[in-house]
Amino acid sequence: MKRHQYQEKLSELLCHKYEKNSENMYQELYDKQPEAIRNAKRLLSNYSPSNPAKDNPSTTVYQLVEELNKRLSPS
Image (cartoon, rainbow, N blue to C red; front, side, top):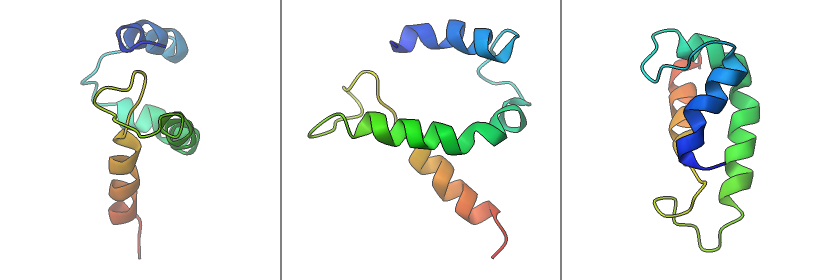
């Protein structure tokens, strides 16, 4: 899927119009994080060497999510 198709697909999957800056998006997608992280890692591994800025499709946002989750979870 190309980046320009994301908004339409997300709207379809969410069953409402996707809005990038929605205040409820985190809560809405929280239970889908593990699968999304697995998919992003798998996708990134398809490129050798990887260059997320140019690889399409590709993302490294999962790395930020993993780091934030470490800091949010009780120690």
